Image (cartoon, rainbow, N blue to C red):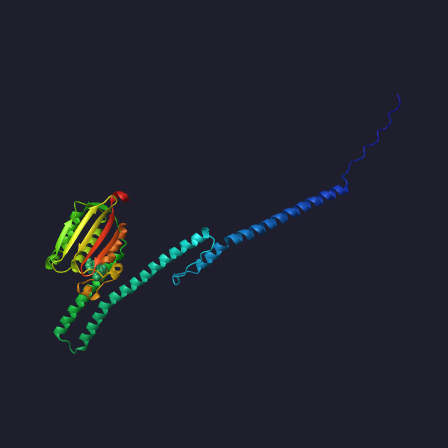
Length: 327
Ligand code: ATP
Ligand code: MG
């Protein structure tokens, strides 16, 4: 057998240095590109969202500048009719309502302070007059005491009315009850005044049932009837009616009294407002009766309207929701 020639060794395959370099270049370029894309993407997103949210940032800055001292300020409504614009409009509306109730509250406090100050100042003046007499005689003491008594009574009635008006009507619980029974009680409470003025009262309730907080409605209807008697003429008349409708019950008080001038009808529900202050004082009024009525009717989700002709007549119309429209 001839000898087998030796097999030459296989050359070892090693990567070409050029190819490796190319691979490294490609990887680092890809990495750089990715970083560039991420960075520019972030930048663009930041710019775009920043610009889109700019109106929100402006709005929040403007809102932060509004406090109890500048509630009259309004935020700017951006021109495009988008969500931010509608948010700005709603905010302006809310701030306007807040301003109104803030002013009403300030006005109320000022009036209350004034009304309380008047009898206090009168009492102080009376005491000083007595102290000036040297020595005061018994009559002066008696007169001063009588005067102070009427001022204390006035203070007491104002404070009671204020407490009633500002009580948060705790324990508000509506029940269904007969209008007949309620008005019988209320009218009997004013029996003497009705007789003294020879007022004729007509009542048409037709077994209507009312739905509400009995004590509060008693107070409200009592205040309206008391006005109808107080501001009525001798031999005048008052007509009380209640009519049941599908959703509401309508109660009216019509009197043939002195009436209310047209330009003052809107103001009579304001606390301490009296058309004729001295006359109301003479009759022992504080101008709080109708404010209490309004608070009670609002609490019942009802409404109250007034029609009046000065010197002729006044009618109060109250609408109270029925039980089925609430339950
Ligand atoms: P108060 O009720 O606190 O004793 P008041 O009767 O003066 O005092 P309101 O009941 O709030 O106060 O009434 C406000 C004003 O409205 C009255 O001062 C009166 O001028 C006018 N007014 C109310 N009801 C009538 C009415 N039926 N006829 C004419 N004027 C009325
Ligand atoms: Mg009154």
